[in-house]
Image (cartoon, rainbow, N blue to C red; front, top):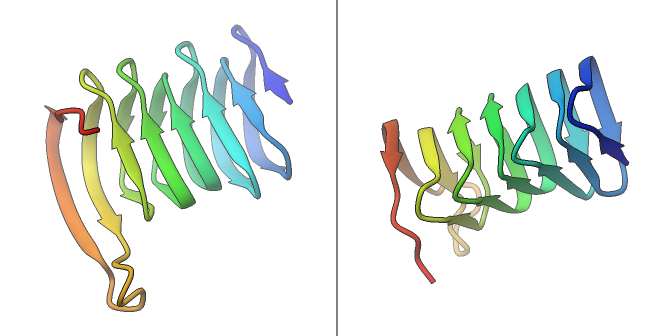
Length: 124
């Protein structure tokens, strides 16, 4: 599925396959697969998905079962919870990151706070 640039939607979005959003969405997003937010995408929602790939703007919390990727054009204000996080140089994140530890998934994992659009170095 694809929500094109210039589109504006509000409500609850739930899907099983990959969805790409290049427009504006406000509400709540739940997915069993991959959510891609394009460079022109503007999301004001809490997101729960297997994989979340961000190139646009997100305002809200993200919980991912597999991974979150913030590309260099990403602007994120909200908390991230995922076992894997990739942040390209140039991406901006203002929020808290929680990553479950492999040996103790019920202990809450490690956390990191990123203040006011802190620039985070890209690791490979």
